[in-house]
Length: 243
Image (tube, rainbow, N blue to C red):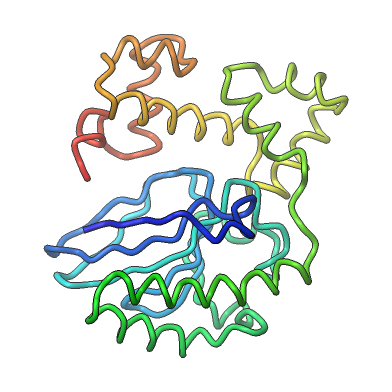
């Protein structure tokens, strides 16, 4: 079972949501690229899930609980103490990053474990306290590139990297550097990720595959199918049939 809630309004410009998931059965799950970075508490301890460029398998056992805080694409800034590109396609223990000042990650792990036996309401209370600590950290560190949301939206519409760079008054090299710094990868990868996520959303709403491909900016349905398999490891219909 997966649940998510809106973040604290104070953090709404930096976070997508807070979430929790309890696995009902064992097996291997796939995490697919969404442009986000997550701070996660799970069976293997607190860690950071960096920005992905392909499907990431996760071994799960029945009853495993994962709880996290999801940053908006391009919104991490320097909050984690390392460049976001250093986290690309990685799952890094929070201790390897030196932890987060003001946040006792192990105490949070214990609180989440205790709250999980009482219900989602208690988990939300714990996540509320974590967000308060995170807000202090975010105020004390340099913020994200203010142009990041504009870049992501421009690339989502299907415009070329060169066109987006020109409209922002940048060279393509400058745009590439800023994308890597903000998102963890270059603008071409970012465009693939945001286009893929749009296709997933439209397909979940019941749109036909040809319509999804056209609306998401793919050359055709075959192009979309190839890109989805590359990013998700499975066909689009199989992906959207999952919870």
